[in-house]
Image (cartoon, rainbow, N blue to C red):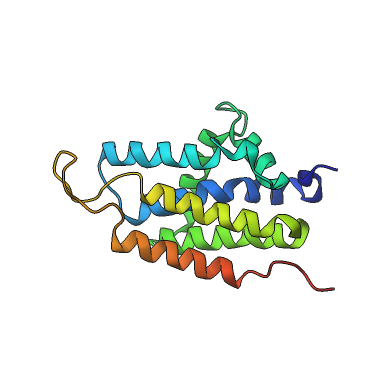
Length: 173
């Protein structure tokens, strides 16, 4: 049985959105110009699609396969659009809290319905946030100087890590 079959369609959608949400959380934590945003969007792509085909986690591979779909078929571009729209409608001025809520809900679903993949999924979520934060320097001048990861981005990653550590890795009956 495919891992996806353990989830309702709505739950699966939340699980698929998790890694994209982790990247966008960082992008919204320290907004920057068009060039920096382009680097961060590429980092989200790389973290959610590139290289996950060899993941030992079946769930991570299945989510990556969904994210690799073309625009209009539920892939990464569609996830980014839906995620940004959700943040705009529901974040109430605090996108970080919104995204942490969305991400921890997805991690909780994985812990409940695919506990063997929960640890790998959580690590992947944090990895997506870290890669996005490392994608563009902040505060430099024409690519010189700047900070690879800002204090705000580091704090957001630590908040995400703490929230995911609080999610149980398996349900108790």
